[in-house]
Length: 293
Length: 276
Image 1 (cartoon, rainbow over the protein chains, first blue to last red):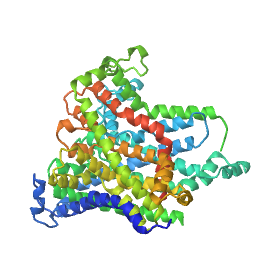
Image 2: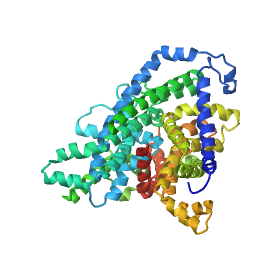
Image 3: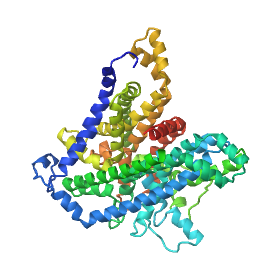
Image 4: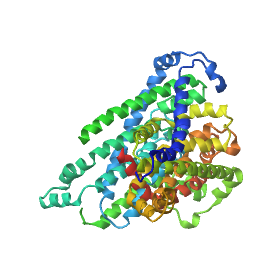
């Protein structure tokens, strides 16, 4: 305690408490109260004059569009986390080995994590463009595609295109968490296994995997929560379209609030999304605890 | 660990890096080549170096207020990073050195912030900022970005301070420093890599911000680069070389910062992620 009272501790903490309170706590409170305000208004300052009730929740739960968004969100989450995990694991196993130039190659392989969502969006829009996209050109050359396909504008491919862009940004997080866990495994375990004649697969199955399982579960939870919040990539590439094919909950909340100015239903939808996220986190925490103890 | 075939492994890693960085490479190429080469039915993947030109950069700087967007992005990023980093350093030090109930609440706040979609939190920001006249204000963007950065930045800083042994401060205090001096002259210099990593994290997050910049500001003179880039997409014929030129300008600082500071950032991120 270095002989100081704990008031110093709280004094140092107070700016953070104020920031979190005013800029996260209070907004959260505002979202919850707004979710009970029924009706729509273009003047947000008059929101508190609207009648209160459970109407927004009834509207949201009864709307087919909500359940459509829930479905899109689930496909988006599973479609993103699965491939991102696979690429992350592969790259982590590779980067865990010693080879020349590893420092820089690791940085390059992790780089997509740092690329702003809007840049991810414009680059993939261009790569997958219908007329001049380089992906279409390559597919045509390989003979796998005969027509021009506007990936982000086509009902059937839009969600897949959005997922590909998201996977690209999401996999480095798996790489770096799994890599950290791999590096914590004592090298002697591998040497002992080698002496005993274990194959590469056996070494992975019985040494690497048990060593990284907890980190893998945790990274999957955090990345799922991230993907659930992801807005930039979807909004900039498709705006939730075509015909709502990519309208996840995060995008729908925004459209309700700022395209239709229905702050009440948007907030209700937001509160429900958060409850969903909390349940997801809670459920997976429990699994995680079981992993540890 | 195997020591076998390190060059083969390096080659594999190089191949993977080439594949995953292809989108960035294509952005750069589109910005640097005459548009006939990239806007083509059979684009050239490996052009001759002599064909490189900076025409797209010159054209877009002449036609769009890119420098204004750049200035706004820099101002908001610097502001939000300084504010968040200061708050997070104080709070991280406190959480690291003073055991209290606040620690558990801090973990909870962090988790909560991970569950709040930016597209949701922007609604109360919009309402609140309308009340206080902060709409169409760079200060509003600074505050919004600073707020969402604080929880994770605090957690990062706590992790870095945890790695600095308390005995070092005690020794400084035995030598006659008071508590604040011990922190300022001894602990903070040791935490420099942590501060750099944390600042990088905050700067990248704010530089990337789109939701706040798009919603809390409507005046085109106050647009950040991200919003400026999105505005290209609304046009009937998207000018891809120009857009990729702006994208390149916008990615360049992130690229440099990330490559230099990635080792610190990664060690801090994983500590932060695995600690809770």
